[in-house]
Image 1 (cartoon, rainbow, N blue to C red):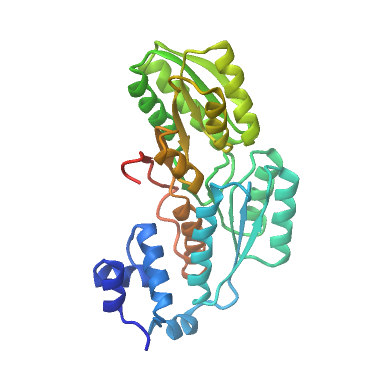
Image 2 (cartoon, rainbow, N blue to C red):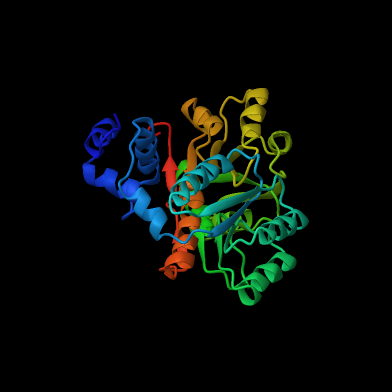
Length: 342
């Protein structure tokens, strides 16, 4: 026998109203709670009475394309989970989701993905854009010539007429990290910043926010530069080893992108009496484990699930219901995680 809203609420430990909002997408529900509710509902065989009405009243044939980059990176996992949930929900309305996952940060690969989706006659596009003039021109062409609405997520791109952006306020998150580092070090010491790709706008905004706040609020902290790791673990490891050789009194490490495991590898190998303070991004399984083991001090989580989940819904509402995006920026929360609040 299929479960009821009351039974789902009891199992999920929430109110029936929260279950109703999560299953019918009315009002804001914490993404993690909504995901849990939907999973429980599926396990219990819950069938919404609205499903038939949804399909009857929906715009059959709506097609939404989604493009992600760095698809094999651990930070993308919650984003893909959010996309998967949105796909499942929008299929109830007769919409189709086409996902293109790109392993690199490559403009040619992204341009090909856009062309592939256009060939499938998508009505809307959600994209993690590569920072390039060609991508910018292609996005504007889609919007102006083909009347295809575009939503950016996780990373944004200036100079386009995209509808809105869903993701972290990356500059402010970098400032947040600087504030944490300043408190940890009491504003004194040497700090190393490691980025992924200098062509990645997300990385650059985080670094800019961090450097800006350090200079303004903690002028006695000495920045030992910003080094690129290409999101590779081994490169992060090598950068830290080389830095500590010339600066054994290194006070802090801030990693704005992937390859964070290299921090643990380097510090374990060097067997320091006192390790530098460490701040990284994303509550991935490996990072959570390292945080619990005391190898990191803070994680900054960016609500990846929401970044994947929200854009397809925005596009569907625009295409099917004619609803414009209520605002230009949908900033996800800057969540500071310690081993005590995981």
